[in-house]
Image (tube, rainbow, N blue to C red):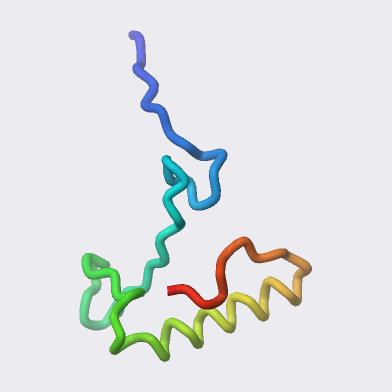
Length: 74
């Protein structure tokens, strides 16, 4: 059996082709248990998003990881 390889761009930041920026994801698992609605860019969730991003940045600093993301996104 011969398999066809689907090209992907895993060597790029965010694993997206054509230099597309990585996409943040944020889901309200209580209201959307199937994670169908990405709320990362929803203004109603901006405080939650920023708080989680601050936690991510703090953890990365704690373990000596260098973030490749923009801390002002989205």
